[in-house]
Length: 163
Image (cartoon, rainbow, N blue to C red; front, top):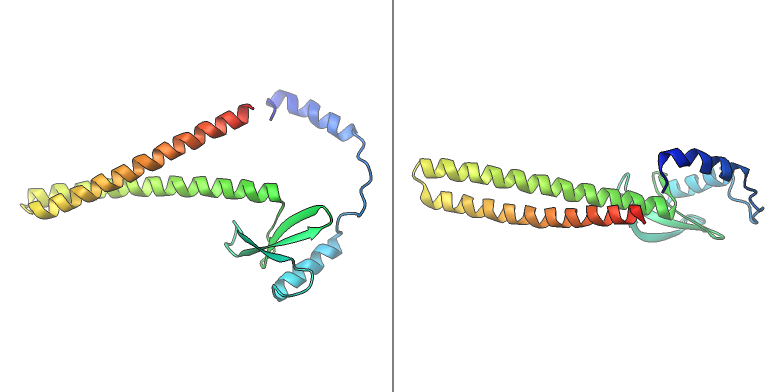
């Protein structure tokens, strides 16, 4: 990670750097298209790769691990493809997004339950009001737990970014 002012100079240095020839050559477009055809056929097709324990963050379908020499990548039946680092980044982003969604849903559930408790109490339904209040307290506590988890994750991300 670099400050924006230093990125241009680094890119210029990287462009001038000589990269040694690597054998075997990476797959060409025809090879990739052949893999796409194999993926569309069935997971048992030759050259498709082994099923992985991961799901595609784009379509939630199963991902297959393709190995070509040292190169490892993941593809789904639809054709979404990921290098290991990009797959990890996608999953990290989606996990955090899911936690924020759950946090917002719990806060809303707590607010709704409290509103229902207030209305029930105004109408003289004390037993129902207590039940709604318990739901509100439960949702509030769960939201607090997620909030602590998010604060920890944000702190971890900031520390990792400064390293």
